[in-house]
Amino acid sequence: MRTLEESMSPLSVLWRIMRYLLLRPETLLLLCISLALWSYLFHTDDVKTIVQSMNVMKGKMKMTPTDGDDVVDGQKVSRTWEFRSPTAAVYSIQGKRDHMEDRFHILTDTINRSHPDIFGIFDGHGGEAAAEYVLTHLPAVLSKQLQQYERQKENSLLNHRSILKQHILNMDKELVEKLSASYDEAGTTCLVALLSEKQLTVANVGDSRAVLCDKDGNAISLSHDHKPYQLKERKRIKKAGGFISFNGSWRVQGILAMSRSLGDYPLKKLNVLIPDPDVLTFDLDKLQPQFIILASDGLWDTFSNEEAVHFIKERLNEPHFGAKSIVLQSFYRGCPDNITVMVVKLKKRRSKAAGQ
Image: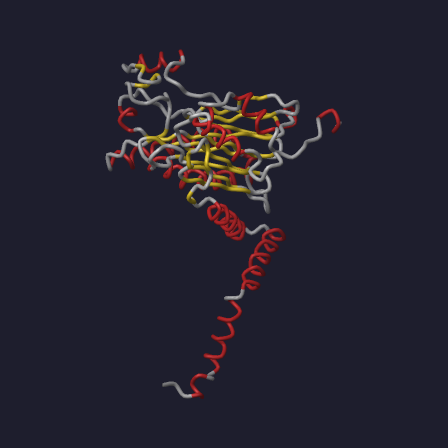
């Protein structure tokens, strides 16, 4: 048993004081504020990374799965995933599937604006491994490359389009190598949007889809689905020695209902499936957008682009900006798939004419 003198030694007293201070919520809050202030004043890269990591961690805490308590058409929605921030919201359900293979990601740097905001939808198939791998690795790699680009863009030959394309193709190589080693045949779509002050860049592989609502309420397609029945895709598949057949939907080699994806190593080895993204760039000053919808194909099986834009436009004042409502409506219409919808609200912009 320790004596009173030992328990009151200087080191013991100091440890007690530090432990008391460090465990108080006020101290943790003060630490976060200090880091943010230091980053704002001195633009220290290390502090930027710490602050961004804190923001991502907050988002992940909100994205943890919960038992669904919504009932649609007499059926209980199995599990739900959700995320909310002042400018973006996501609602996602497992639906009638045995597993949840959809993944999504939002990475914003609201403090330093060191790179464009990154939004991603990854709809897995054949298991969760591919979508989970892309979720874990692609946004982080993009963030690092984009930060470097923003610091050196005057002397760089790259741009947002080339960065997206390069890293999506690199991600597929990593994924195919990793999953083929364990004979895991999983694959995933990849829909990524980079939102900067004046420009929106969207890259797509597969059949997840992005749509924008312009200033007049019109639906503007931001991506193109990659389906086997499309003439360009059908010709490419046939030239590679493959075929498409109808089994509920048109499928590559009678297996996959999309003609491009990340992963799916058996079809990649046959050269009938490719990972090449379409990358499109949009002028925000010209479009004057109100919001963007990014969603897995579960939504687009039951909603057209125009229907989805009109539906969300009427519900932007809801907590999830209409994302939850449209997901549940899609489930009500009979979609059997996982359904994930992300809505990004955009600030009102001055027109070019007004700014002149």
